[in-house]
Length: 112
Length: 114
Image 1: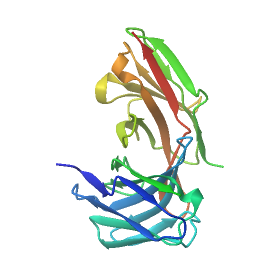
Image 2: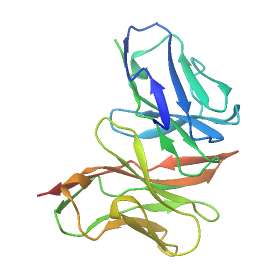
Image 3: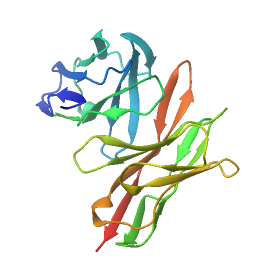
């Protein structure tokens, strides 16, 4: 049983396209996150949701739009993809905001 | 500014020897501190945390960490390293900026040689 699952694992797409990454957690956690990990392995929070409500938006371009249909799901839609969006995107969840997080396996996005 | 630092990009240790991966932090208020491990092409895995109580915290896979308030440090330790411990280790701290969030250090790559 995968606690935090995200799909797709790999995504190769052209500049200008729109794509989505889906995330689901079965841990019963209230808080979910999207993180971006760049090629140097720096990990930066993008968004944080608590019970479907946006709590943190880390000055991410508005081409990135998260959606949380319920507290077990947090999807990430990206419009007009750019080369600089190439990275690994991790979904995570935690029992409460700011406590230990449980991460998905990552989605490798390559924009060509 | 609130931050977390991992001063070593890489730590090399021989199998069977003790290992230490360093972490220092700067936060306002009482810190919530975490260690995570990332294996190649995988997500981060939570190892241990300090919130309050005993300064020595034990976690998964035989790892432990010592909280030192005066030195604002939270170093990760293991008495006897295994080759399989080779991975990328992240220290993290909870901060409050309009809501709670976790900021991560830059990561330290641990190499354990047989």
